[in-house]
Image 1 (tube, rainbow, N blue to C red):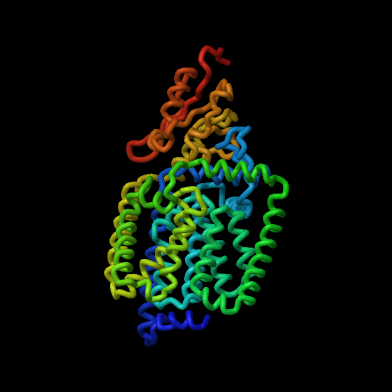
Image 2 (cartoon, one colour; image 1 turned 60 degrees about the vertical axis):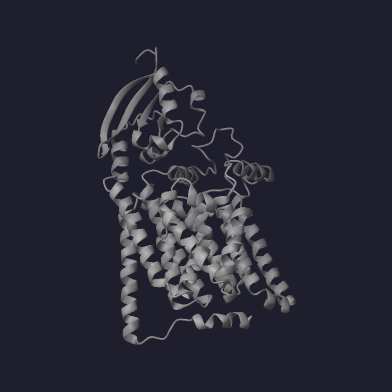
Length: 484
C-alpha cells in the first residue's frame, strides 16, 4: 500500500516560515468567523418553512415525553409505516438537547449546525489521513461548512447532519485501520437513517483505490473484512437493543416498500438536487461541476491516479443503489464532489479563480436569502401564536410549523398525507391560517374550502407575522350546532 500512498506525498502541506503560517492562521480564523456569522444571520431564516422540521421534532417529542416510536402527526392511525424502526439514536440526542434548551425549532437547528461543524472537523482529519495537499486539507472542511448541501442540513431538524457525521466517522475509522469500529459505526449510521449505508461506499472506494495492495496480501484483506463484519454484527446487536420492542421483519418490509414508492423520480437524488425544488440555489454549483468534468476529461486527468478521481464515480453509483431520490441526501455524497472539483482546479493551477467564483456565488446566494427573509422571525411568530391561542384544550388544525406553538396539544397538520381530518368528525377546533406559506401544502386551499363549507368561523386573533403577512386564528364550530 505504500506505493499508492507515495503518489500523494508530493501533495503534502508545503513548508512555510512562522510568519507565513501565522498569517494563514489569521486568514483561516477570519474565514471561520465569517462563516459562523452567516450561520448566525440565517438561523431560522434559511428556510421560512420546511415540512420536515415539525415532522421530525414532533416525532422526537412523542418519543421523549410519551415513549412512542410513531409518526403521530403525519400518518393515519392505521398506516402500515406509522411505527418508526430507525432513528432512536437521533431521537435520544436531539431529545436530550431540547429538554435542556427548549422544544423549539431554533434549538434543534442549533444542534444540527453544531453537528455539521463536527462533521467538517472529521473531514479535516480525513483529508490529513488521505495525505492531500495543504490547500485541500483546508478547503474541503471549509466547503463542508458553507456549500449548500451541508448548509441546508445544518438548517433543518432532519437527522441528515448526524448521519453525515457518523458516515464520516465510519470512513475515518476505516482509514485509521480501526475496522471493527468502522463496521460498528456503519450500523450506527444506518440505525439513525438507512442512508448511513453510504459510509460503506467511501470504504469501498478506498479499497478499490488500493486494490492491488489488498489482493497482493489477500489473507490480510480477509482479516480486514472479518473485523468489519464483526463490527457490523455488534452494530446489529446495538440496533436490536434499541428497537427490540417495535421491530418486526414485516414492519421492516412495509417501511422499505412504502419509502421506495413515495417518489416516482427515477434519476436519483443527485439529479434532483440540481434540477428540482431549490435548483436555483445550486445552478452555480452545477456550472462548477460541469467545468470540472470538462477540464478533467480534456486533460485526461484520470491518469494522475488521484483518489478523488475514483471516489466521485463510486459515490455517484451509491446514489442509484440507495434508491429514494430525496435531494437532502446530497450531503452524504457531496464530499466526493468537493474533493473532485478542488483537486481538478488545483492540479491545473486555477484554484484562486475557482475560489473567487465560489466566494462570489455564495455571497450572492446567502446575501439574497438573508435580504428576502430579513424581517421573518419564526421565534416571534411562534410566541405570538402561543400567546393568542385559548388554553382550553381544543384541537388545532394548522400548517405543521404551528406545532411548535403548542407541542403536545391535539394537532392535525395541513399536509397531503393527513387525509383523515374529515373522518375525525370534529365538532369544534381552532384553525391557524398562515397564508404566506400555504403554497407549501398542495391541499391547503381545498381543505380550507371544505372547512368553510361545514364550520362557522369566528376570528379569535389576527396579528402581523412580518412585512404585510398576517397570522389568523379562528375558532371553528360545526354549523347548526347550538351555542353553549
